Image (cartoon, rainbow, N blue to C red):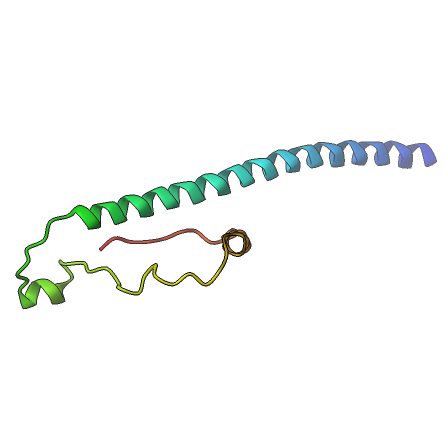
Length: 107
């Protein structure tokens, strides 16, 4: 009876050890994937901003062009005011990055 319990305990301990090894590998892969996702998001956003900046638009816009969404105008308040230090900004990004995907649709 005690030998059976000991055998089952050893089998359970072996399973736990294997699961911890797999969990450690998955944790590293998840961290790498999260970093890759952040980098891809930043590159895509930079590429979209570059494209919008260098796209030529007609200087005389018609009413239909402006209100149909064909012309994209930058927000004049975007990126002007800095309210956090680099360390605070990085800490907030890390805090909110888990579980959030950078989704930005260029219309």
